[in-house]
Image: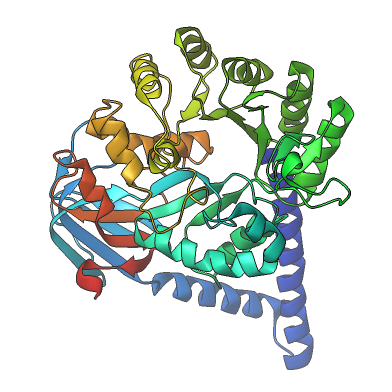
Length: 437
């Protein structure tokens, strides 16, 4: 959304400029002061506010920064104004800093889950859809946001509101506005599926009643384009496309229509795809990520690698429901070795939020045979790249967002330590400390 954001920001900047200039000259008229004196007063206030912004210095035994292949010893991370301003290894600490001593801990970037359903509770789908309003489900999601944040997840991509409209867009806005605490949420709104090819299943309903569906239905190229436009104008940052539903449901032409229209607004597409044909057509259509990907084989892995497509395997939901995964793990390891970018996505919300999303890392290491460092990158720098946040998130380095977590010990020796996060900072605000103090 680069062009659209630039235009909006330019307009906002112009408005702010007019606003402050008006204040200066109103002050001049009311107080008979020089406009330049008022301007200097305003600048002075801004400078003073910036100068007195709280500074933190976090010290720890080790740092996994999201880009290096080895942990770095005895880091000191300096944070101010929601950003990391410095990382040093000589214990250099500003006099004004509040020191957070995490002796015995390893620092890491905040984790990211790129496949969540904040508006779902992992229970009875139809009861939730027909018995609870989007408003109720949005308020309920505050609990899930807190759980994810406490578990060390500072960014979530929410890939379908499951019949709650654009409530995930409002959740994202609420967090960004600062009156709801939670991870940064990147919303995909309603999702788009072929007509009748999503929950609740048509044969399970009274066909005489026109009941709400868990997604937005579309048939044909024109309806696909219209659905994208409606969702973009509602504020989604991604489009979720259901490329198949067991078997392919959209044609390649329809999928390309979705992807091409989304690209006009600098919005990427994530494709639910489990069948071989669904995965193939989704990649050919130009999607940026494959969700689930049960049907990956050698040919499709090469196709994904050649097209720089990310794979979010959502192992946790399959493990929760005890699906057979031997073939998935086999091809996931092959994809990893062939440099397909693997990203952590759990599908939480399709199973209960009481489960810790970091369990996905254990599956990546112990069953898909990823190296622990690469599994950690699947939760940090890889999803940052997928989400086009790589210039400000997913690593611990100067000028990046101050999204930082810590675990006791070394997660490269025991990946399950990431299921026991002791410290959480998101955008420079501390949400969890060892012992809850």
